[in-house]
Amino acid sequence: MEIYPGIEVKKEVKGGIPVIRGTRIPVNVILEALASGMSPQEVAQEYEITEEDVRAVLAFASERIKEERYFLAA
Image (cartoon, rainbow, N blue to C red; front, side, top):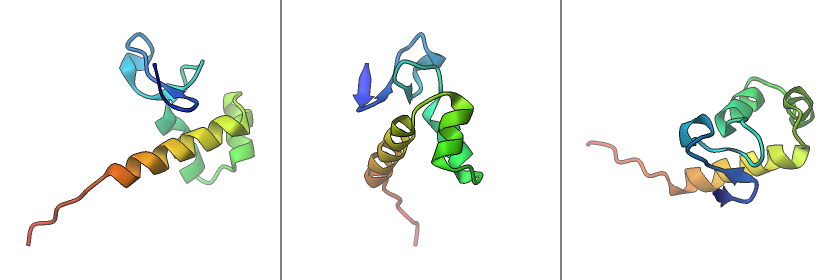
């Protein structure tokens, strides 16, 4: 089931965690690679995905973080 353009979840693929559509590559793996300093081009080459896939991961993460709320105890 596509939950965001280019991002899907399937119970039988990685237990239902978000992956790049048509792959078994988890979104968090791509985010961690980018956070470690790899360029989008390097990530795409390393994981044999497209730069569009990398952008889909970033867009998905951005949308998810917009939904986050943190309540701090006073």
